[in-house]
Length: 498
Ligand code: UTP
Image (cartoon, rainbow, N blue to C red; front, side):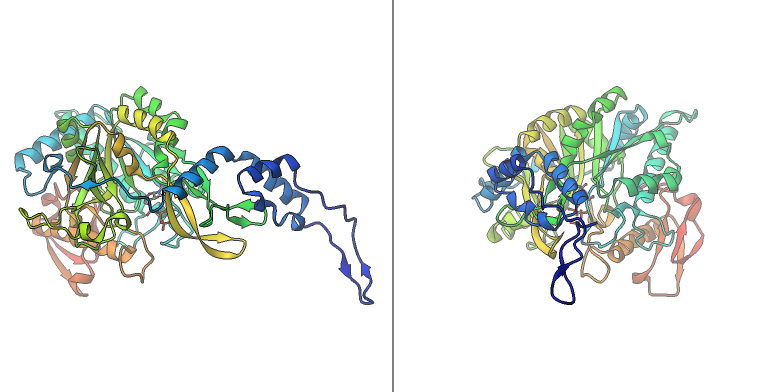
C-alpha cells in the first residue's frame, strides 16, 4: 500500500488527502554510508514508497556488506581490459588424451574409482544456483524436462546416475555380499532456486535416493550493477541481485560448514559439475580413478575445441611455468585462438572447459580461504529485470575455475563431446545448446550403445531425429546392456528401462 497522496478535485481544489503524514526522509546515517560508496541513488524513489516498502528497503541496505561489495565492484571494473599475463599451452604431460588411453588404463581407473566410492571417499557437488535466464524457464534448470521419451528432469537423470554408480560399486566390490553404499550429494542452490529445488526433490521422493544423502546449501548473492558501478534497482524498494557465480561454491561450502561435514563422513574427493549437461557422468569412477592415480589436487574433464572461434573457455598455463587456469574466449586473442601446433597440426589452445571437475577435500579447504580474499570478480553482461524494465547490466561472478591457480597440481582428462557433453543453455529455437539439441545428443549416444549391445531399432521418423533413451538405472556408460538388448527390437523413440 502506498501512502495516500494529494489529488486534484473536480473544481481544481486539492482534495481527498487521507491522513498524509509529512514524507519522512531516509535514515540520514544510512544515506551518508551510501554516499561513501556512491550508491545513494537507491533512495531515489523513496517519496513514492509506502511505509512497509521503506522498511523493506532500509532493511535490505542495512543487510549489505557495503565495504566488501564496493571493493569487489571497484576492483572488478578496474581490472576490465587490463592486459593479462602471457599464456602458454597446457603441457602435454598434464593431459590424459583419449587416443593415448589404453584399455588397461581404463579398467584400472574404473576399478580404482569404484573401490574409492565403495569406501565412501567420494561426494558429489552439484552447481545449481544459476538463474538459467537464457533457457527462460521459471523453474530451476534441474527441474527441466528436455523432451526425452521418459520425460525425466535433469535432476532425475543425475539422481539415477548416482543410484547406478552406487549399485556398480556395491556389486563389484562386495564380492557377492551386496552391501548398500551411498554417495553423498551436496546441491548448491541460490535464493532464486532453493525452495523450488527442495520441493521438487521432496515431491519426487528424492528420485529413489535416501533423503538424508542429499544436502542442499545456498550460495551468496551480489547486487547487479550498471556499467558505472551503480546498483540496479529491481523494484523501487529492492536492489537487483544475482547469485555470485558458480565459483561461489567454495565460500558457500565453507560458510555452511560442509567441508567439515565431508571430513566427518570420511570423504576425500569431490566431483563437482553443472546442472545443465544432460550427458554428465555424475560420480564417474574412471575420472575418479584417474584423479587418485595422478595424485593431483584438482582435475577437469576437457573436450577438444571444435573450431578456433568456438565460444568456449580454454585451459592455458598462465606465465612461464605458471599454474593452469581457464581463459575465456573473449579474453583470447584471435591469433592465439587459431594458432596451430606445428608438430601435431592441431590448435595450440585446444582444451575446452566443460565444468566437470574433481577436487580433494583438502584443496577445497585451501581454496575457500584464498578466494575469500579475492576482490576481482568476472563481470557478466546480462539482461536484468529493473524498475525500468529489462536493462543490460553486469552481474558480479566468481567462476568454478577461478580455483585452479591455487591448485598445487592439476590434471586434465580428455573426454569425447558426443559421450559426455550435451549442454542445455538456450531455449528451443536458438541455434545451439538447446533442450532439443541435448535430447538428440543423448538419443544418438544411447542408440549406439543399444546397437553395440546387439539390439535393433525400428523407427517411423528419420533416425537422425529420434533414437532410444537408456535409463541410467540400466546402464551408466553403455555397460551391461547385452542381457537387455541382444536380439531385441526397439521402436524409436522409446526408453529402455529395467
Ligand atoms: P551458466 O553460466 O550457464 O548460468 O551456469 P545459468 O545461470 O545456468 O544460465 P544463464 O547464464 O542465466 O542463462 C553454468 C552452471 O553453473 C551454475 C548453473 O546452475 C549451471 O549449472 N551456476 C551458475 C551456479 O550454480 N551459480 C551461479 O551463480 C551461476
